[in-house]
Length: 69
Image 1 (cartoon, rainbow, N blue to C red):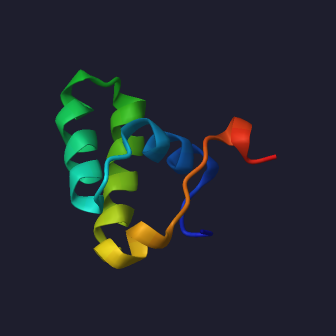
Image 2: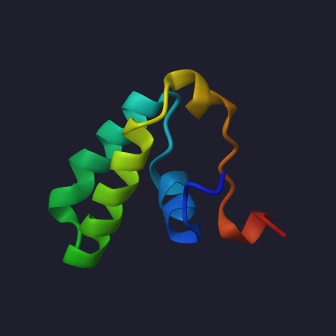
């Protein structure tokens, strides 16, 4: 899962839905309510997710940082 940074993984965990499409939609919907720096993180993360297929997304395991030990 080297394509995602530590921050991006944690961000995905906050907005993770059943599908990649729904996850991206949840992030995008929340962006107007985020501070600029977080909006940039959301945009960058959403763009990376859009490059995945649903099958690739389904195979990924996203664990929040505290569970990655």
